[in-house]
Image (cartoon, rainbow, N blue to C red):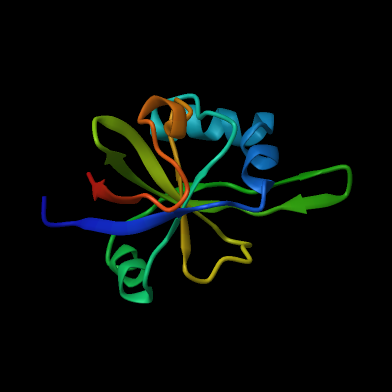
Length: 126
């Protein structure tokens, strides 16, 4: 496949699990991506050119929301897969990451694919 992003698995900030378990985001992702996302993200360190590849694609928009006077941002998703596991690259509109992309899937990827921090992997864009 011509559109692929290569990255190295890195430890995240632990924030992905918090956001991924929120009902609003779970519902949006189920409806728009077609799966119930595992509450956590796989973080991949990539180079800037790889991130620019996403800017050429049409994202699937996950809407933000408000709850108890606090606003939660939306995200852009890009259907993709790692090995034989379908999922999505998710790019939060509000993020501290500069050279890291996050990948979500219906399963815990590290255990499913026997991955660990430091492993190099390829994400194929669908």
